[in-house]
Image 1 (tube, helix red, strand yellow):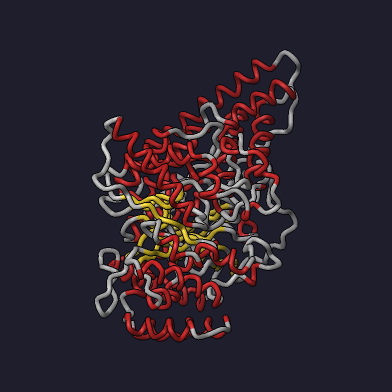
Image 2 (tube, one colour):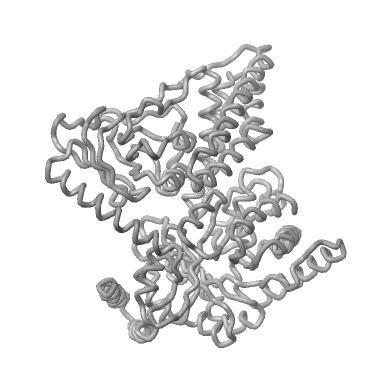
Length: 615
Protein backbone atom coordinates (compact mmCIF):
# COMPACT_ATOMS: atom_id res chain seq x y z
CA UNK A 1 0.00 0.00 0.00
CA UNK A 2 1.41 3.35 -0.99
CA UNK A 3 1.40 5.79 1.90
CA UNK A 4 2.75 8.88 0.17
CA UNK A 5 2.33 10.45 -3.25
CA UNK A 6 -0.62 9.86 -5.55
CA UNK A 7 -3.34 7.79 -3.90
CA UNK A 8 -3.54 4.24 -5.17
CA UNK A 9 -5.17 1.01 -4.19
CA UNK A 10 -3.49 -0.89 -1.38
CA UNK A 11 -2.79 -3.73 -3.81
CA UNK A 12 -0.93 -1.63 -6.40
CA UNK A 13 2.41 -3.02 -7.57
CA UNK A 14 5.37 -1.30 -9.22
CA UNK A 15 5.09 -0.98 -12.96
CA UNK A 16 6.10 -4.12 -14.83
CA UNK A 17 8.65 -4.30 -17.59
CA UNK A 18 11.38 -2.08 -16.13
CA UNK A 19 14.72 -2.63 -17.75
CA UNK A 20 17.10 -4.36 -15.36
CA UNK A 21 20.75 -3.38 -15.85
CA UNK A 22 23.41 -6.05 -16.22
CA UNK A 23 24.83 -7.14 -12.89
CA UNK A 24 28.32 -5.98 -12.06
CA UNK A 25 28.09 -2.60 -13.82
CA UNK A 26 28.00 0.66 -11.89
CA UNK A 27 24.55 2.21 -11.82
CA UNK A 28 23.53 5.62 -10.48
CA UNK A 29 19.89 5.89 -9.37
CA UNK A 30 18.61 9.37 -8.60
CA UNK A 31 15.86 10.10 -6.12
CA UNK A 32 14.69 12.70 -3.61
CA UNK A 33 17.22 13.77 -0.97
CA UNK A 34 15.57 13.25 2.42
CA UNK A 35 18.05 13.06 5.26
CA UNK A 36 21.52 14.49 4.64
CA UNK A 37 24.64 12.42 4.97
CA UNK A 38 26.67 9.82 3.09
CA UNK A 39 26.58 6.07 3.69
CA UNK A 40 28.78 3.36 2.21
CA UNK A 41 27.90 -0.28 2.74
CA UNK A 42 26.26 -3.43 1.36
CA UNK A 43 22.66 -3.46 0.16
CA UNK A 44 20.13 -5.31 2.28
CA UNK A 45 16.89 -5.55 0.34
CA UNK A 46 13.70 -6.07 2.30
CA UNK A 47 10.23 -6.80 1.06
CA UNK A 48 6.93 -7.22 2.82
CA UNK A 49 4.82 -10.27 2.07
CA UNK A 50 1.86 -9.08 0.00
CA UNK A 51 -1.52 -8.62 1.61
CA UNK A 52 -3.62 -8.41 -1.52
CA UNK A 53 -6.91 -10.14 -0.82
CA UNK A 54 -9.17 -10.52 -3.85
CA UNK A 55 -12.37 -8.57 -3.82
CA UNK A 56 -14.94 -10.69 -2.08
CA UNK A 57 -18.68 -10.49 -1.56
CA UNK A 58 -20.42 -12.06 1.40
CA UNK A 59 -23.85 -13.63 1.58
CA UNK A 60 -26.87 -11.98 3.13
CA UNK A 61 -26.96 -12.81 6.80
CA UNK A 62 -23.15 -12.83 7.16
CA UNK A 63 -22.90 -9.10 7.88
CA UNK A 64 -22.59 -9.43 11.65
CA UNK A 65 -19.88 -12.07 11.41
CA UNK A 66 -17.93 -9.89 9.00
CA UNK A 67 -18.22 -6.88 11.30
CA UNK A 68 -16.90 -9.08 14.11
CA UNK A 69 -13.87 -9.93 11.94
CA UNK A 70 -13.31 -6.22 11.42
CA UNK A 71 -13.62 -5.57 15.17
CA UNK A 72 -11.00 -8.25 15.87
CA UNK A 73 -8.63 -6.67 13.33
CA UNK A 74 -9.17 -3.27 14.95
CA UNK A 75 -8.32 -4.73 18.37
CA UNK A 76 -5.15 -6.35 16.99
CA UNK A 77 -4.16 -3.11 15.28
CA UNK A 78 -4.60 -1.17 18.53
CA UNK A 79 -2.29 -3.60 20.31
CA UNK A 80 0.34 -3.13 17.60
CA UNK A 81 0.13 0.64 17.84
CA UNK A 82 0.49 0.41 21.63
CA UNK A 83 3.60 -1.77 21.17
CA UNK A 84 5.06 0.88 18.89
CA UNK A 85 4.33 3.47 21.57
CA UNK A 86 6.19 1.33 24.10
CA UNK A 87 9.21 1.32 21.78
CA UNK A 88 9.44 5.12 21.82
CA UNK A 89 11.71 5.18 24.85
CA UNK A 90 14.56 3.50 22.94
CA UNK A 91 14.43 5.92 20.02
CA UNK A 92 16.35 9.23 19.83
CA UNK A 93 14.49 12.11 21.45
CA UNK A 94 13.76 13.75 18.09
CA UNK A 95 12.25 10.54 16.72
CA UNK A 96 10.14 10.08 19.85
CA UNK A 97 8.57 13.49 19.38
CA UNK A 98 7.93 12.76 15.70
CA UNK A 99 6.30 9.37 16.16
CA UNK A 100 4.19 9.94 19.28
CA UNK A 101 1.67 12.36 17.71
CA UNK A 102 1.46 10.16 14.64
CA UNK A 103 0.68 7.07 16.72
CA UNK A 104 -1.93 9.11 18.56
CA UNK A 105 -3.51 9.90 15.18
CA UNK A 106 -3.45 6.20 14.29
CA UNK A 107 -5.13 5.38 17.60
CA UNK A 108 -7.86 7.92 16.86
CA UNK A 109 -8.51 6.36 13.46
CA UNK A 110 -8.84 2.97 15.16
CA UNK A 111 -11.61 4.49 17.26
CA UNK A 112 -14.97 5.69 15.99
CA UNK A 113 -13.49 7.12 12.80
CA UNK A 114 -14.85 7.87 9.36
CA UNK A 115 -12.83 4.95 7.96
CA UNK A 116 -14.35 2.34 10.28
CA UNK A 117 -17.87 3.75 10.08
CA UNK A 118 -17.65 3.73 6.30
CA UNK A 119 -16.26 0.17 6.20
CA UNK A 120 -19.10 -1.12 8.39
CA UNK A 121 -21.66 0.61 6.18
CA UNK A 122 -20.14 -1.00 3.08
CA UNK A 123 -20.32 -4.43 4.74
CA UNK A 124 -24.03 -3.89 5.42
CA UNK A 125 -25.11 -2.06 2.28
CA UNK A 126 -22.89 -3.69 -0.35
CA UNK A 127 -22.33 -7.12 1.24
CA UNK A 128 -18.56 -6.71 1.04
CA UNK A 129 -15.98 -8.65 3.01
CA UNK A 130 -14.30 -6.67 5.78
CA UNK A 131 -10.98 -6.33 3.91
CA UNK A 132 -12.70 -5.24 0.68
CA UNK A 133 -14.81 -2.71 2.59
CA UNK A 134 -11.71 -1.28 4.32
CA UNK A 135 -9.83 -0.97 1.01
CA UNK A 136 -12.76 0.70 -0.76
CA UNK A 137 -13.44 3.15 2.06
CA UNK A 138 -9.74 4.06 2.39
CA UNK A 139 -9.57 4.70 -1.34
CA UNK A 140 -12.66 6.91 -1.23
CA UNK A 141 -11.35 8.97 1.70
CA UNK A 142 -7.86 9.34 0.23
CA UNK A 143 -9.18 10.35 -3.18
CA UNK A 144 -11.42 12.97 -1.57
CA UNK A 145 -8.45 14.34 0.37
CA UNK A 146 -6.19 14.52 -2.69
CA UNK A 147 -8.94 16.07 -4.83
CA UNK A 148 -9.16 19.07 -2.50
CA UNK A 149 -7.94 22.30 -4.02
CA UNK A 150 -5.19 23.20 -1.63
CA UNK A 151 -1.71 24.60 -2.22
CA UNK A 152 -0.43 22.41 0.59
CA UNK A 153 -0.07 19.25 -1.51
CA UNK A 154 2.42 17.79 0.96
CA UNK A 155 -0.13 18.07 3.75
CA UNK A 156 -2.77 16.37 1.60
CA UNK A 157 -0.37 13.50 0.88
CA UNK A 158 0.39 13.07 4.56
CA UNK A 159 -3.29 12.89 5.43
CA UNK A 160 -4.00 10.39 2.66
CA UNK A 161 -0.99 8.41 3.84
CA UNK A 162 -2.33 8.19 7.38
CA UNK A 163 -5.59 6.71 6.09
CA UNK A 164 -3.72 4.22 3.90
CA UNK A 165 -1.45 3.14 6.73
CA UNK A 166 -4.36 2.23 9.00
CA UNK A 167 -6.14 0.47 6.12
CA UNK A 168 -2.94 -1.45 5.38
CA UNK A 169 -2.63 -2.50 9.01
CA UNK A 170 -6.26 -3.60 9.20
CA UNK A 171 -6.00 -5.51 5.93
CA UNK A 172 -2.88 -7.38 7.04
CA UNK A 173 -4.54 -8.33 10.30
CA UNK A 174 -7.71 -9.44 8.51
CA UNK A 175 -5.70 -11.66 6.15
CA UNK A 176 -3.17 -12.78 8.79
CA UNK A 177 -0.29 -11.52 6.63
CA UNK A 178 2.86 -10.92 8.66
CA UNK A 179 4.52 -7.54 9.06
CA UNK A 180 8.06 -6.72 7.97
CA UNK A 181 10.90 -7.30 10.43
CA UNK A 182 14.27 -5.57 10.44
CA UNK A 183 15.97 -7.79 13.03
CA UNK A 184 18.09 -9.55 10.40
CA UNK A 185 19.55 -6.40 8.81
CA UNK A 186 23.36 -6.66 9.22
CA UNK A 187 25.14 -3.75 10.89
CA UNK A 188 26.38 -1.11 8.46
CA UNK A 189 23.91 -2.07 5.71
CA UNK A 190 22.01 0.20 3.40
CA UNK A 191 18.35 -0.76 3.55
CA UNK A 192 16.64 -0.90 0.14
CA UNK A 193 12.86 -1.34 -0.13
CA UNK A 194 9.96 -0.49 -2.38
CA UNK A 195 8.64 1.73 0.41
CA UNK A 196 8.73 2.26 4.16
CA UNK A 197 5.84 3.34 6.33
CA UNK A 198 6.41 5.62 9.35
CA UNK A 199 5.80 2.59 11.58
CA UNK A 200 8.53 0.72 9.67
CA UNK A 201 10.89 3.63 10.17
CA UNK A 202 10.22 3.49 13.91
CA UNK A 203 11.66 -0.04 13.97
CA UNK A 204 14.98 1.03 12.43
CA UNK A 205 18.07 1.17 14.61
CA UNK A 206 20.16 4.19 13.54
CA UNK A 207 23.25 2.67 15.17
CA UNK A 208 23.03 -0.36 12.87
CA UNK A 209 21.58 0.87 9.57
CA UNK A 210 23.91 3.11 7.58
CA UNK A 211 21.37 4.41 5.07
CA UNK A 212 17.90 3.97 3.57
CA UNK A 213 16.76 4.08 -0.06
CA UNK A 214 13.25 3.36 -1.36
CA UNK A 215 11.36 3.50 -4.64
CA UNK A 216 8.34 5.24 -3.16
CA UNK A 217 7.96 8.27 -0.89
CA UNK A 218 8.44 12.00 -0.92
CA UNK A 219 10.24 14.72 0.99
CA UNK A 220 7.25 15.87 3.04
CA UNK A 221 5.72 12.62 4.27
CA UNK A 222 5.79 11.21 7.79
CA UNK A 223 8.38 8.60 6.77
CA UNK A 224 10.73 11.33 5.56
CA UNK A 225 10.28 13.30 8.78
CA UNK A 226 10.98 10.14 10.80
CA UNK A 227 14.17 9.36 8.86
CA UNK A 228 15.41 12.92 9.37
CA UNK A 229 14.62 12.67 13.07
CA UNK A 230 16.55 9.39 13.28
CA UNK A 231 19.47 10.99 11.44
CA UNK A 232 19.79 8.14 8.91
CA UNK A 233 21.09 9.28 5.48
CA UNK A 234 18.15 8.60 3.17
CA UNK A 235 16.99 8.90 -0.44
CA UNK A 236 13.36 8.21 -1.36
CA UNK A 237 11.54 8.12 -4.68
CA UNK A 238 14.22 6.13 -6.60
CA UNK A 239 12.52 4.58 -9.67
CA UNK A 240 13.60 1.04 -10.50
CA UNK A 241 15.81 0.70 -7.43
CA UNK A 242 14.54 -2.61 -6.08
CA UNK A 243 14.94 -4.34 -9.44
CA UNK A 244 18.43 -2.95 -9.98
CA UNK A 245 19.78 -3.66 -6.49
CA UNK A 246 20.76 -7.09 -5.25
CA UNK A 247 21.43 -8.06 -1.67
CA UNK A 248 25.12 -7.67 -0.90
CA UNK A 249 25.82 -5.14 -3.68
CA UNK A 250 28.25 -2.43 -2.65
CA UNK A 251 26.45 0.90 -2.45
CA UNK A 252 27.25 4.59 -1.96
CA UNK A 253 24.22 6.61 -0.82
CA UNK A 254 24.24 10.41 -0.68
CA UNK A 255 21.24 11.75 1.23
CA UNK A 256 22.27 15.33 0.48
CA UNK A 257 22.47 14.98 -3.30
CA UNK A 258 19.77 12.32 -3.60
CA UNK A 259 21.88 9.67 -5.36
CA UNK A 260 22.33 5.92 -4.88
CA UNK A 261 25.37 4.39 -6.62
CA UNK A 262 25.11 0.63 -6.94
CA UNK A 263 28.25 -1.44 -7.51
CA UNK A 264 30.41 1.72 -7.51
CA UNK A 265 33.74 1.93 -9.32
CA UNK A 266 36.88 2.74 -7.39
CA UNK A 267 36.52 6.36 -8.48
CA UNK A 268 32.93 6.50 -7.18
CA UNK A 269 33.99 4.83 -3.92
CA UNK A 270 36.78 7.35 -3.46
CA UNK A 271 34.42 10.26 -4.16
CA UNK A 272 31.94 8.79 -1.69
CA UNK A 273 34.56 8.56 1.05
CA UNK A 274 35.55 12.19 0.45
CA UNK A 275 31.89 13.25 0.65
CA UNK A 276 31.47 11.24 3.85
CA UNK A 277 34.38 13.10 5.46
CA UNK A 278 33.18 16.49 4.18
CA UNK A 279 29.64 15.89 5.43
CA UNK A 280 30.88 14.93 8.87
CA UNK A 281 32.84 18.18 9.09
CA UNK A 282 29.88 20.23 7.81
CA UNK A 283 27.51 18.55 10.26
CA UNK A 284 29.86 19.33 13.12
CA UNK A 285 30.15 22.94 12.03
CA UNK A 286 26.38 23.45 11.73
CA UNK A 287 25.81 21.65 15.04
CA UNK A 288 28.03 24.20 16.75
CA UNK A 289 25.77 26.95 15.39
CA UNK A 290 22.79 25.55 17.27
CA UNK A 291 23.65 27.38 20.49
CA UNK A 292 25.29 30.42 18.88
CA UNK A 293 23.24 33.61 18.43
CA UNK A 294 22.08 34.76 15.00
CA UNK A 295 24.05 38.01 15.02
CA UNK A 296 25.66 39.82 12.09
CA UNK A 297 29.34 40.73 12.07
CA UNK A 298 28.46 44.26 13.21
CA UNK A 299 26.34 43.06 16.13
CA UNK A 300 22.79 43.21 14.71
CA UNK A 301 20.60 40.45 16.18
CA UNK A 302 18.25 38.53 13.86
CA UNK A 303 15.37 36.46 15.22
CA UNK A 304 15.23 33.03 13.54
CA UNK A 305 12.05 31.07 14.17
CA UNK A 306 10.46 27.97 12.69
CA UNK A 307 7.18 27.30 10.93
CA UNK A 308 5.18 24.40 12.37
CA UNK A 309 2.51 22.63 10.34
CA UNK A 310 1.93 19.52 12.45
CA UNK A 311 3.04 18.74 16.03
CA UNK A 312 5.15 15.86 14.69
CA UNK A 313 7.68 18.44 13.44
CA UNK A 314 8.24 19.88 16.93
CA UNK A 315 11.47 17.92 17.71
CA UNK A 316 13.05 19.19 14.49
CA UNK A 317 12.63 22.76 15.73
CA UNK A 318 14.66 22.17 18.89
CA UNK A 319 17.22 20.20 16.91
CA UNK A 320 17.69 23.06 14.43
CA UNK A 321 18.28 25.70 17.09
CA UNK A 322 15.29 27.89 16.21
CA UNK A 323 14.15 30.30 18.91
CA UNK A 324 10.39 30.03 18.91
CA UNK A 325 7.71 29.36 16.33
CA UNK A 326 6.99 32.15 13.89
CA UNK A 327 4.00 30.43 12.32
CA UNK A 328 1.96 27.65 13.93
CA UNK A 329 -0.64 26.52 11.43
CA UNK A 330 -3.74 25.25 13.24
CA UNK A 331 -5.49 23.52 10.33
CA UNK A 332 -4.26 20.11 11.54
CA UNK A 333 -6.87 20.32 14.33
CA UNK A 334 -9.74 20.37 11.85
CA UNK A 335 -8.69 17.62 9.45
CA UNK A 336 -10.43 14.25 9.15
CA UNK A 337 -13.08 15.22 11.69
CA UNK A 338 -16.85 14.97 11.63
CA UNK A 339 -17.21 17.49 14.47
CA UNK A 340 -15.44 20.76 15.18
CA UNK A 341 -12.74 20.80 17.89
CA UNK A 342 -13.94 22.53 21.04
CA UNK A 343 -12.04 24.94 23.27
CA UNK A 344 -10.51 22.13 25.32
CA UNK A 345 -9.29 20.30 22.20
CA UNK A 346 -7.59 23.49 21.00
CA UNK A 347 -6.03 24.12 24.41
CA UNK A 348 -4.69 20.56 24.68
CA UNK A 349 -3.19 20.85 21.20
CA UNK A 350 -1.43 24.17 21.88
CA UNK A 351 -0.31 23.46 25.44
CA UNK A 352 2.50 20.94 24.70
CA UNK A 353 3.79 23.14 21.89
CA UNK A 354 4.01 26.25 24.06
CA UNK A 355 5.55 24.26 26.94
CA UNK A 356 8.12 22.68 24.60
CA UNK A 357 9.36 26.13 23.58
CA UNK A 358 10.51 26.84 27.18
CA UNK A 359 9.72 30.53 27.09
CA UNK A 360 10.41 31.17 23.40
CA UNK A 361 7.56 32.88 21.59
CA UNK A 362 4.90 30.94 19.66
CA UNK A 363 2.85 32.70 16.98
CA UNK A 364 -0.45 30.87 16.50
CA UNK A 365 -2.27 31.57 13.26
CA UNK A 366 -6.00 31.06 13.61
CA UNK A 367 -7.72 28.79 11.11
CA UNK A 368 -6.98 29.60 7.47
CA UNK A 369 -9.70 27.71 5.65
CA UNK A 370 -11.21 28.16 2.24
CA UNK A 371 -14.08 26.29 0.64
CA UNK A 372 -11.58 24.24 -1.37
CA UNK A 373 -10.10 22.42 1.63
CA UNK A 374 -11.31 19.04 2.78
CA UNK A 375 -12.63 19.83 6.23
CA UNK A 376 -15.89 17.98 6.50
CA UNK A 377 -17.05 19.51 9.77
CA UNK A 378 -16.43 23.05 8.54
CA UNK A 379 -18.17 22.53 5.23
CA UNK A 380 -21.48 21.99 7.02
CA UNK A 381 -23.50 25.16 6.92
CA UNK A 382 -21.02 27.06 4.77
CA UNK A 383 -23.40 27.29 1.84
CA UNK A 384 -22.01 27.65 -1.68
CA UNK A 385 -18.29 28.06 -0.85
CA UNK A 386 -17.43 24.79 -2.60
CA UNK A 387 -19.03 25.88 -5.84
CA UNK A 388 -16.59 28.68 -6.58
CA UNK A 389 -14.28 28.13 -9.52
CA UNK A 390 -11.45 30.00 -7.79
CA UNK A 391 -11.45 29.30 -4.04
CA UNK A 392 -8.30 31.39 -3.54
CA UNK A 393 -10.45 34.45 -4.23
CA UNK A 394 -13.47 33.32 -2.22
CA UNK A 395 -14.54 32.97 1.39
CA UNK A 396 -11.33 32.06 3.17
CA UNK A 397 -9.07 33.19 5.99
CA UNK A 398 -10.34 36.02 8.17
CA UNK A 399 -13.34 36.52 5.87
CA UNK A 400 -14.67 33.08 6.71
CA UNK A 401 -13.89 33.45 10.43
CA UNK A 402 -15.79 36.72 10.68
CA UNK A 403 -18.74 35.03 9.02
CA UNK A 404 -18.45 32.17 11.53
CA UNK A 405 -17.35 34.10 14.66
CA UNK A 406 -18.02 31.09 16.92
CA UNK A 407 -14.95 29.43 15.35
CA UNK A 408 -12.83 32.46 16.14
CA UNK A 409 -14.16 32.66 19.69
CA UNK A 410 -13.20 29.04 20.44
CA UNK A 411 -9.66 29.52 19.12
CA UNK A 412 -9.19 32.87 20.86
CA UNK A 413 -10.32 31.36 24.18
CA UNK A 414 -7.86 28.47 23.95
CA UNK A 415 -5.01 30.74 22.89
CA UNK A 416 -5.66 33.17 25.72
CA UNK A 417 -5.64 30.29 28.20
CA UNK A 418 -2.41 28.80 26.87
CA UNK A 419 -0.80 32.26 26.92
CA UNK A 420 -0.61 31.89 30.70
CA UNK A 421 1.93 29.09 30.13
CA UNK A 422 4.31 30.96 27.85
CA UNK A 423 4.57 33.88 25.41
CA UNK A 424 2.26 33.62 22.41
CA UNK A 425 1.04 35.87 19.62
CA UNK A 426 -2.18 35.57 17.59
CA UNK A 427 -2.04 35.87 13.80
CA UNK A 428 -5.00 36.63 11.51
CA UNK A 429 -4.82 35.10 8.01
CA UNK A 430 -5.64 36.79 4.69
CA UNK A 431 -6.26 40.27 6.08
CA UNK A 432 -6.97 42.76 3.28
CA UNK A 433 -8.52 45.79 5.02
CA UNK A 434 -8.14 47.44 8.47
CA UNK A 435 -11.79 46.74 9.36
CA UNK A 436 -11.10 43.00 9.45
CA UNK A 437 -8.53 43.50 12.20
CA UNK A 438 -10.91 45.82 14.06
CA UNK A 439 -13.74 43.28 13.99
CA UNK A 440 -11.43 40.44 15.03
CA UNK A 441 -10.10 42.51 17.94
CA UNK A 442 -13.62 43.20 19.18
CA UNK A 443 -14.25 39.43 19.31
CA UNK A 444 -10.82 38.89 20.91
CA UNK A 445 -11.49 41.36 23.71
CA UNK A 446 -15.02 40.05 24.23
CA UNK A 447 -13.66 36.52 24.69
CA UNK A 448 -11.06 37.79 27.17
CA UNK A 449 -13.76 39.51 29.24
CA UNK A 450 -15.81 36.33 29.29
CA UNK A 451 -12.82 34.26 30.44
CA UNK A 452 -12.06 36.73 33.23
CA UNK A 453 -15.65 36.43 34.44
CA UNK A 454 -15.03 32.68 34.59
CA UNK A 455 -11.92 33.48 36.69
CA UNK A 456 -9.73 31.74 34.10
CA UNK A 457 -6.03 32.51 34.54
CA UNK A 458 -4.88 34.83 31.76
CA UNK A 459 -1.58 36.63 31.19
CA UNK A 460 -1.31 40.16 32.56
CA UNK A 461 -0.99 41.55 29.03
CA UNK A 462 -3.14 40.32 26.17
CA UNK A 463 -1.08 38.45 23.54
CA UNK A 464 -0.39 40.66 20.49
CA UNK A 465 -2.87 40.39 17.62
CA UNK A 466 -1.18 40.51 14.23
CA UNK A 467 -2.05 40.46 10.54
CA UNK A 468 -0.73 38.29 7.72
CA UNK A 469 0.35 40.39 4.76
CA UNK A 470 -0.14 38.03 1.84
CA UNK A 471 -2.07 39.94 -0.82
CA UNK A 472 -1.12 43.04 -2.84
CA UNK A 473 -4.09 44.86 -1.31
CA UNK A 474 -2.86 44.21 2.22
CA UNK A 475 0.68 45.28 1.35
CA UNK A 476 -0.51 48.50 -0.28
CA UNK A 477 -2.84 49.20 2.66
CA UNK A 478 -0.13 48.30 5.19
CA UNK A 479 0.02 51.87 6.58
CA UNK A 480 -3.65 51.70 7.56
CA UNK A 481 -3.58 48.08 8.72
CA UNK A 482 -0.54 48.84 10.90
CA UNK A 483 -2.67 51.24 12.92
CA UNK A 484 -4.96 48.34 13.91
CA UNK A 485 -2.55 45.39 14.17
CA UNK A 486 0.18 44.74 16.76
CA UNK A 487 2.56 43.06 14.30
CA UNK A 488 2.92 41.93 10.68
CA UNK A 489 3.89 38.53 9.28
CA UNK A 490 4.59 38.69 5.55
CA UNK A 491 3.55 35.48 3.80
CA UNK A 492 5.73 35.62 0.71
CA UNK A 493 4.32 32.46 -0.91
CA UNK A 494 0.76 33.74 -1.28
CA UNK A 495 1.95 37.31 -1.82
CA UNK A 496 3.92 36.21 -4.89
CA UNK A 497 1.02 34.05 -6.10
CA UNK A 498 -1.56 36.83 -5.87
CA UNK A 499 0.79 39.48 -7.26
CA UNK A 500 1.84 37.46 -10.31
CA UNK A 501 -1.47 35.59 -10.79
CA UNK A 502 0.47 32.31 -10.80
CA UNK A 503 -0.45 29.01 -9.17
CA UNK A 504 2.75 27.04 -8.62
CA UNK A 505 0.76 23.80 -8.90
CA UNK A 506 -0.25 24.63 -12.48
CA UNK A 507 2.42 23.22 -14.79
CA UNK A 508 1.73 25.66 -17.62
CA UNK A 509 2.47 28.77 -15.53
CA UNK A 510 4.64 27.50 -12.65
CA UNK A 511 7.77 28.87 -14.34
CA UNK A 512 6.36 32.39 -13.96
CA UNK A 513 6.31 32.14 -10.17
CA UNK A 514 9.18 34.36 -9.01
CA UNK A 515 9.43 35.80 -5.48
CA UNK A 516 12.24 38.04 -6.77
CA UNK A 517 9.94 39.75 -9.26
CA UNK A 518 10.33 43.50 -8.65
CA UNK A 519 6.59 43.88 -7.98
CA UNK A 520 6.76 41.31 -5.17
CA UNK A 521 9.88 42.88 -3.68
CA UNK A 522 8.31 46.34 -3.71
CA UNK A 523 5.25 45.06 -1.86
CA UNK A 524 7.49 43.44 0.76
CA UNK A 525 9.42 46.69 1.07
CA UNK A 526 6.23 48.76 1.40
CA UNK A 527 4.78 46.52 4.14
CA UNK A 528 8.08 46.36 6.02
CA UNK A 529 8.57 50.12 5.99
CA UNK A 530 4.98 50.67 7.14
CA UNK A 531 5.64 48.50 10.19
CA UNK A 532 9.04 50.00 10.93
CA UNK A 533 7.65 53.55 10.86
CA UNK A 534 5.42 52.58 13.80
CA UNK A 535 8.21 50.55 15.47
CA UNK A 536 6.00 47.51 15.06
CA UNK A 537 7.42 43.96 14.77
CA UNK A 538 7.45 42.54 11.26
CA UNK A 539 8.64 39.15 10.03
CA UNK A 540 8.78 37.04 6.89
CA UNK A 541 7.29 33.57 7.25
CA UNK A 542 7.26 32.32 3.66
CA UNK A 543 9.86 30.33 1.75
CA UNK A 544 11.95 33.44 1.13
CA UNK A 545 12.84 33.55 4.82
CA UNK A 546 14.43 30.10 4.65
CA UNK A 547 16.64 30.78 1.63
CA UNK A 548 20.18 31.70 2.77
CA UNK A 549 20.85 33.52 -0.52
CA UNK A 550 17.94 35.89 0.09
CA UNK A 551 18.93 36.76 3.65
CA UNK A 552 21.17 39.73 2.64
CA UNK A 553 18.29 41.26 0.67
CA UNK A 554 15.73 40.76 3.45
CA UNK A 555 18.05 42.22 6.08
CA UNK A 556 18.82 45.10 3.77
CA UNK A 557 15.10 45.84 3.47
CA UNK A 558 14.94 46.20 7.26
CA UNK A 559 13.63 42.79 8.31
CA UNK A 560 15.10 41.31 11.50
CA UNK A 561 12.77 38.35 12.04
CA UNK A 562 12.58 35.33 9.73
CA UNK A 563 10.50 32.18 10.15
CA UNK A 564 11.14 29.07 8.06
CA UNK A 565 11.11 25.30 7.93
CA UNK A 566 13.22 24.01 10.80
CA UNK A 567 15.73 22.32 8.49
CA UNK A 568 16.65 25.69 6.98
CA UNK A 569 17.58 27.38 10.28
CA UNK A 570 21.27 26.33 10.56
CA UNK A 571 22.22 27.53 7.07
CA UNK A 572 20.26 30.77 7.45
CA UNK A 573 22.02 31.35 10.77
CA UNK A 574 25.34 30.68 9.07
CA UNK A 575 24.48 33.30 6.44
CA UNK A 576 23.40 35.86 9.07
CA UNK A 577 26.66 35.47 11.00
CA UNK A 578 28.68 36.24 7.86
CA UNK A 579 26.87 39.47 6.94
CA UNK A 580 27.28 43.17 7.69
CA UNK A 581 24.07 45.21 7.89
CA UNK A 582 25.51 48.22 6.04
CA UNK A 583 26.55 45.94 3.17
CA UNK A 584 23.07 44.45 3.12
CA UNK A 585 21.40 47.87 3.04
CA UNK A 586 23.55 49.01 0.10
CA UNK A 587 22.83 45.73 -1.68
CA UNK A 588 19.06 46.06 -1.13
CA UNK A 589 19.07 49.60 -2.53
CA UNK A 590 20.84 48.34 -5.64
CA UNK A 591 18.37 45.49 -6.08
CA UNK A 592 15.35 47.74 -5.64
CA UNK A 593 16.62 49.97 -8.46
CA UNK A 594 16.26 47.07 -10.90
CA UNK A 595 13.23 46.30 -13.07
CA UNK A 596 14.48 43.09 -14.70
CA UNK A 597 13.88 39.92 -12.63
CA UNK A 598 16.81 38.21 -14.34
CA UNK A 599 19.18 40.98 -13.29
CA UNK A 600 17.86 40.78 -9.73
CA UNK A 601 18.53 37.04 -9.77
CA UNK A 602 22.10 37.65 -10.95
CA UNK A 603 22.71 40.20 -8.20
CA UNK A 604 21.32 37.91 -5.51
CA UNK A 605 23.38 34.95 -6.66
CA UNK A 606 26.48 37.11 -6.93
CA UNK A 607 26.13 38.55 -3.43
CA UNK A 608 25.63 35.07 -2.01
CA UNK A 609 28.86 33.87 -3.60
CA UNK A 610 30.80 36.79 -2.14
CA UNK A 611 29.33 36.14 1.33
CA UNK A 612 30.25 32.45 1.19
CA UNK A 613 33.81 33.31 0.21
CA UNK A 614 34.08 35.62 3.21
CA UNK A 615 32.90 32.95 5.62
